Amino acid sequence: MPPPSPAAPGTTAPPRPTDVDLPARVQVVLDDFLDAQGRVLAEVGPDCAALLEGIRALLRGGKRLRPAFCYWGYRGAGGADGDGIVDVGAALELFQAAALIHDDLMDDSDTRRGLPAAHRRFASLHAGAGWAGSEERFGLAGAVLTGDLCLGWSDELFSAARLPAADVARARGVFSLMRTQLMGGQYLDVLEQAAAAVSDPAGAVDRARRVVRFKSAKYSVEHPLLLGARLAGAPEQLLASYSAVGLSLGEAFQLRDDVLGTFGDPEVTGKPAGDDLREGKRTLLVALALRSASPAQAATVQRLLGDPDLDADGVAALREVLVATGAAAAVEEHIARLVEEACEALDAAAVDETSRAALHGLLVAATSRQA
Image (spheres, rainbow, N blue to C red):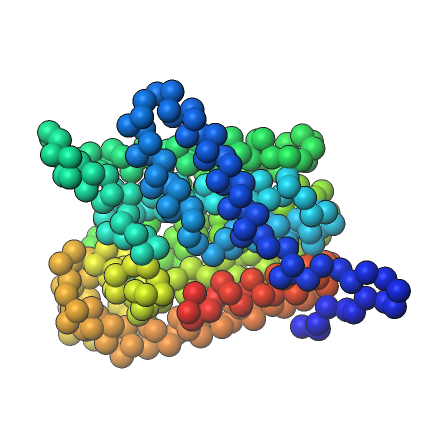
């Protein structure tokens, strides 16, 4: 990919991607919005502050990739920098927070971004106060409610974005599609874990890739790009280019996350080592391993995958199968092919060189081995 073109003599150079400081600007919008919502909840009662505290903590972390894809999709389609597109990026962060809170609940995860998952946090609050009833059920209820708040707030912030009403209305379809397809993808993920024992093994690879596409790939990259493009009034040709970039890159992004969830360092991922294995995630890694596994290797996977008490030795045994069957190498090769496809689509897209350079940087960040 060629570097951004230099400014002509006597002109002002276009802003570099690093000059935008989008994460900090998104954080300001989120902080102001949550302050306002805190005042609303205070009218209900001071105890509602607990609902907001965990959301604030969760929203202080993360890589802000979705707002960045939306922002540079918007800029690449001719949109000008301004507060409105940052508002939309903040709405995406609230939507992702809802997805993460509910995902951790469904997966019974202990941590998120190095902090207790929402349901664990509320369970600890219950236990520490010595309240009546089940601390686990209280934790589940608290997580459902905070996730629902984030979901509703994402729509509220998107609707109130400081952009022309016609632009917001034009992009509304993408925002709605993103939310519905993510929920469907989440259900497919849960279904695959529950029905794996009676599902057709031959179709496991295709099913795993379908889960990746609809649970993560589309809402992580394609939909944010299209959302930004729609807000800017992009032509259909650019929308098609963004979809090509987003689908390939989004799948590569989730596959990288799956690899990190299995082999990653907890200091990097913010989750315990091998957490996806304890949760019984039917990832592409697992599907490919079972397709090539010997009877003994398949038995190891069936015995250990999804054991919530899986210890370090069990994690190591499953990792050994994933490597020995060639599944880990195959997924790395697939990630590399998807990244190449995304790069080719981005290079062919009709965007300015500043936006192209920014999107290329995001492409690398989204699929890094240390993401």
